[in-house]
Length: 262
Image 1 (cartoon, rainbow, N blue to C red):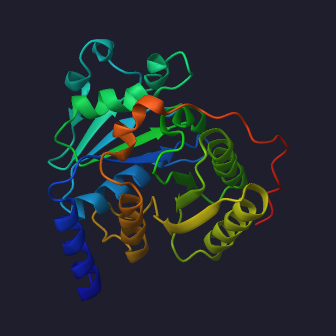
Image 2 (image 1 turned 90 degrees about the vertical axis):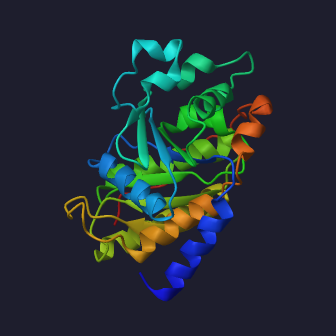
């Protein structure tokens, strides 16, 4: 790690030392393989900042939650390492929907069940995230790889969250080798479509090779993306404002632009 990155990391450690939990929404993408590796890489970047992360895995292909989740969520959390914990949560957000269609109470329940974590990383479909993070001060992370279907799926998730949750700034993490030219073209295309069709912004992006050794050093781009996600999520903001999180109605309808030509 360069001296600059070390200085930035030290500053972030001090900033987060006495903070409340930060929330990072990750839009699940059933079209990609290796999503778990991407989540692990992000957790490793947070761990370098001496932060404890709870991965709340509510993706469509994620494990079913324990039967105890309805009565004692804290006992369903599995500790994977000193810095990373895991909660199987497929379908759990939908069990917390109120009369307004909001599932924001789920985030509050998770924060209560894991008071010692610094980051809650919620991996879930866009439709479920929209019910939790409507108009919150968070930056969703999109996942994709070089398959055109996965890129279209990532754009669809962005469109849903833009229209239903009012979220306008995004990051992207791709499962591919960082030096692939197609990765740059995909990021540029998503950036262009976000701006031109949604009025949204793809702020930054990084790649993580799912075939690389788990002991390989993290890239500067991934470290930067992790820091940006944390700085975009004020401590406690998503939980403190959970009571008035109400999903929005779509601003407009229309087909997705073509994202298949890479």
